Image (cartoon, rainbow, N blue to C red; front, side, top):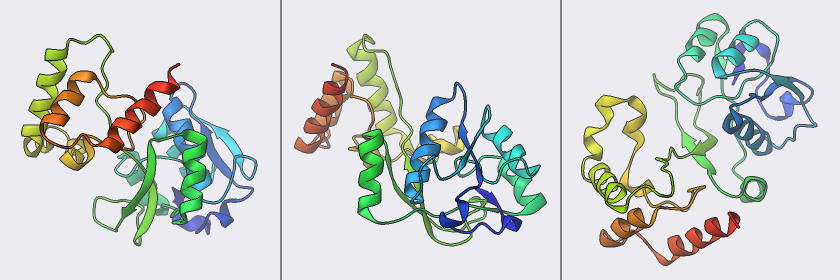
Length: 217
């Protein structure tokens, strides 16, 4: 995300500029920021990395002119402040499959091209574009009892339409993404049991599971 009045409109414009790349203990944000650079046709050597602590703090750096771009998800409330003061614009990522293969090679799995359109809630999305997509995951410890995992998975599956009022992010929990080839971590055996029962655990998913398990060795 950049300030509208910065004149930065593409990844090429970002070369030599100050970008939040190090989020300290929020390593997932650091990984996302670096993956986003690849999607823009850049590397961390093409920009000046800026350290921050969290997305709102990164936004403040952009707002105050101490950074030129900040990594952060659509819907972050703090971005409304930047939009009100200077305007806010996301930089769209490349659609070339080779670009996304580079991201996959560097970070294995987890990221995918998310096609987004302008809307009142998509602050900074001024035209249809591709951004760095990443599914939210429900993570458990490996020894969580099978009956607990099975019941939780089944409950979420059967009541997904009722989740939205509890948190806006839960509106994005769709059955199509529950058993996903974009998952960056292995599935619990009890979750797999349920997905097999409802017919969404495919041979591709089984192969993906083995690849994820192999990473732990």
